[in-house]
Length: 446
Image (cartoon, rainbow, N blue to C red):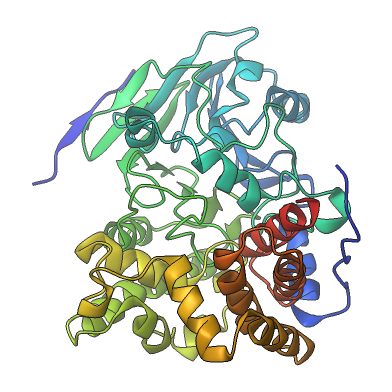
């Protein structure tokens, strides 16, 4: 039952550079227009700073102060945003609202606290995504996060991060987790809560999706929705390849339905340019919700037919009317990852095939495959042939067999690195592209 409450107060070793003339690279490059630096007025007294940081930062101007929604990833970024906002209003900051706890939305908070001590609002589950990792002592996520983010790549190998401009974190290649420098002082402890700050009435709504501590902000006077990371102009990141606790695709779709229920004329996502115009907002939220719901429902349909995850990613294909939308292109998230995440969230690691209950070790399987191929030399020749023929995924997989037998096989490392580089060249998804290129770089440096 829903609860309602109301409150009114590096070295590169012969690394092939990625060609800039293929369709995928051009498409990803074009996406950079979505976060060119600008301050956009989305409604009367409502402004959103796009491109100054990796996430959007918004300001609502009230009677005797302003409210800030999210604060960017670093204090340096936020200082530049404060400078721009002060050109529009010199009223004191009365409140900051975090849509969720990811550090790219919270890390700049200190820049907004230098002259004021405002209320800081967040969901009562603020920071809950990181808790299982921290409690379990999991640290390797930082390595995968650096690969996903492209933090170890030179600038010429990075285009963007799909929904954000290129940044290099100062503290090394870790996931964008909240720094904890600025803790919330007020919490959304129910499904919906109305607050009033600086004469501005806002509704905070619990909306689990990319994180369980997500909320969206509805500003009825201006008809503006601040969606956090439940929306941006890309297929959503239903699963992050850096590794993350399960994100409920079903609840994400429900949260998008809550967003769509509002008569909004402007939609501010966590990243990329806002959507303006009531008809456009309605269409975008409807399509976005339908896409997420489809991934969930079609995957469950296939699961109930006994399909494994590898079979499901072929079975679950977005309908053409959704797949062709520019705001559902897989720049950041990918439908296939969502399919696998739905399966794992409901049924866990076992795919249902008894052969996979106790699989051979990678080395044992590789030794048998090599024997079948006629020996490791023949397997190496097959991998080289696949690479030359442009069968890059197969070349990478064959190289993995060789590396399982001999981790120091230089020829296999070269083949895998070259295959990953070619896969990256054809990849429109920025996180996959970064991951391919980073591992290729690691293999060459070994």
